[in-house]
Image: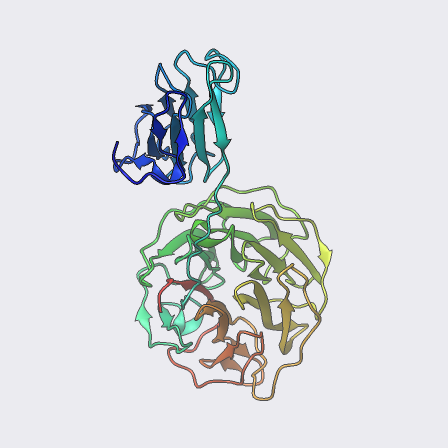
Length: 426
């Protein structure tokens, strides 16, 4: 026997047996469909691609011990099965099926004798303690006018970078969201003068926008999108919008690899020009779009029915996440009146009433919003009726949800594009 022996127990034969602290773990991760286990050893079992059946020794001595570990946290998808190989398992013979199907589980079994056979001394799931770093950077892209063919990266300090020419189809009324924890997607939009598309463009974790990919879902513009599901496994959802002939309330989920699903039957009031924001670390909210309503999205991407929304009803407003688990909505158009108010979304999804904008914030609609720096947000560009033109300025939101005054803009002025966070490094 090799390895460290600690907290020893004696087998019936009087031979010292290694316990959990002294188990010899195999250095090879098991990825196959079968494994023959030996007493006194531990095994890392990776079921990412298939189930695994572990066959126990055909003979055992009281005190023999084996530990099996869910290496990739995938037993919940592809189970671990144990073949007790003629011996009892928890008092039942080996005609019974022994299955462990909880992700993150560790099974520690000890042989107790012929009557009960192999007995688990623990079979608990271990919490997935590490969490990925939050979104650090942002990207704003598309829009109307001369800015439709550009994107602008936003660094982890909230500084907007100069224009980068787009490779995708220039359009406005697009939407955007983070997905997969560190990437972004821009789907849908309107190509001037009157063509609506469901084209999508993926953004890698270096901020590079890919060329057009074939879309899924109803062609439309002025929808909204947000990430949900949490962490590196984060998915996204886009919902509502205008098809060119009518408002809609369909939604489309986006996998953590950027695949857009087909339409999910709509819930809530059909509308366009609404905002979306993440909250609670794994959920999202859709709000406004003219009716004073909001719709919560669960951590599995289910859109709930209408809830009466606090604050001023409006269209062409924008949302973003801040503080790690909260959201904020800014600006919009209320019956041709430009707004500079914000509405905070709590970590439990409660949409607050209007917060008056601080001095120096230009009222406008069609801004681009996203998270940056881990716990802050930014709103950039937009259209101001007072100026009678699109703008280039930005407004930073601190980790407490307070929006700052205008910052001199960078890049081509535009409105009605979209923004999203990407990258988990500063």
